[in-house]
Length: 157
Length: 283
Image (cartoon, rainbow over all chains, first blue to last red; front, side, top):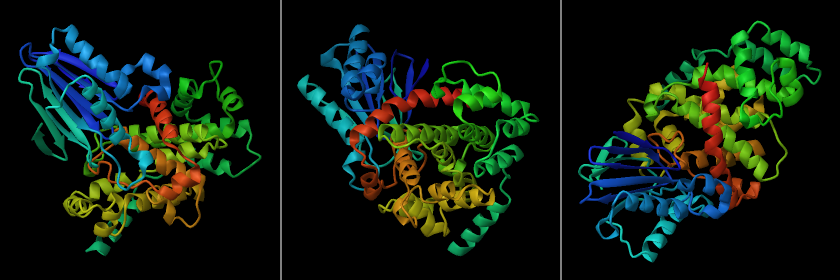
């Protein structure tokens, strides 16, 4: 199956599946992979903290980093994933040009992610974050390979 | 070279599709304080497809009307005729804008979805900031990137040069200007001028990336400027240029904007974008 993850969305899959998300700007794309079970999931979260709109967060926890990340881990654990085996990668969290703090939602998304992971003793294997480019992510669940494409240039994460 | 590009591009503005007749007639009503429901009905009587679209839009949850609307008259009573004129124009331009824009790497419908998102985010920001509602914001936001339709087909050969310039930290619209002698905001404004749009809307489109370069500051312009960057950050209509635009500090100061305003509006926008894209798309 090929799953497309929209903004404020999460998909999990197994061997044979491809999970894609398009156009990460300031949003966080987070990929989890268990290489033994060959299962994985991807989150596309828009905003750092759910307290800005609790009602939305209840209806859709994937919109926010602080509520979406735990949900992604839960989904993978429910499929048989084990914390010690998980490979965690992040992409996105971009910002527009200039130093207007107000628009650094991408940076704040990244900060909240790092805090959550740190608290739970989880390290990122790799990341392609910040800057002002748009990123599309292809996640192959058979191999765990994550490819980031931006302006026609593909790189493996 | 630069001047040749500019001349070539601006000559394309003249051959750009003209504004549909019903929208032109509606537009002329905007300046007339004595506009009546009968006049609006008179224009729409001969446009059954357009009328059906307007009613569908009017009944979408976005406008939050308490009861279902079945006639133009009823829609005018509940929405106000200025709002209705905006919806007529939105329906008319959707056919022009609902296309792919190759130069900017926007897929079919990408530009239109971005346009709807900026309209929704603009109105959301106005509300959140407690600014008096202004129906024209919806139209200005909807049309802010119109110029990309012309430039998209012209910049294929120049996109590398534009990207190299922009990679040096220059905002994308400035890189466009440096390479082509014009940018998508100027081209969009020229099209709207040729369609005889109100100067305020033309102004908001012209300076939507550089609100501080406009002759006078304007709330509608500042709002469209901020909403545009916010929607690109959310990835809606983000193309080849990514986030290579610079939000103006003066504009955010003039608006009294804070991070919380941006985030709350962002959290609400997606739902309405999906809703309106569906209504516009279902023709």
